[in-house]
Image (cartoon, rainbow, N blue to C red; front, side, top):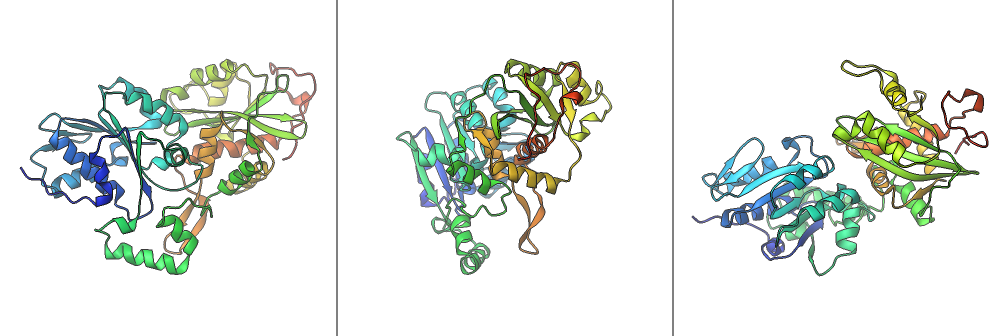
Length: 424
């Protein structure tokens, strides 16, 4: 049967063999639609196992499943493809399925060989996820397709595939001008932003990195720290106690920052993220103990004292029972905590390798946007980046606490000198 094909010329390299195919840029470039159409055509021509992935996916509703299903009907392929709730199956055995990378890289490894992996909204993907995913897509002639709108210059995906592209990659910047199907509604939005805000236009429609950090809470401070050389190699200093600050999650991530106060310097030496079963208290306690730091205190959010149905005591008690001595942070308003985090970022030294996923989250943490008023709100957006940002806020509050030695809980590791955590 004949299949109507409407794919912009810029995306024809999708049909050429290459390990990595990277399409990035700005709004209106038709990246998702074009890649989805190409996948459906390739899956129709030949049996393929296709994984559609993104950094976080709590359900199939978060995936491109709906887009693919709509295109199957538009392309009159509904007699070839069967659409189920969680996958799409072709009459020739082609299978299309979905996964979130942070939560499910382990389960991806257990699946049979994957021919094509499409990573959508890849600007959100962390270095850790890339390092786990890439060796998993190992079938002979397998390919990794990547699409994203440019956000920050330092994002792992932009650095890995655009700044450091090589001969194994097809890398194309696609914009509105490469899309012959651009609607008049989008064209009006484009022209309006061009008239009113040229720097914003260059980012949103021109696909340039956002040097204005629009709506970002911490990104400008992160970039300032990087430009001043404070995001560098920051090793653990033996004999100096380490504090940790936790943001606890089950549905979301549990994030932990590790810091030392060396003289008047605050130093962040480590970061840990955990998901799903890895957020089990015993698993988290094992991570803490394995690092073999000299710990002073583990700081938890104020609500870690609450007990919930089905729990073996509060999170604080469970950690104490597991040998992790902890203290609850005061309940400080989020806005005030954010200001403490900003103050910390103005001075702190951060290890660039061990904290890179945490720093990536901080760089993406942003305020909500009010479409009606055309401005950013005062409260932050609750997405994947908020986990790392919340735990960093707790770290700033923890470093702002003073813990006299006579208040040190029984069982805490002793140190040669009392620890005085300075106000940063």
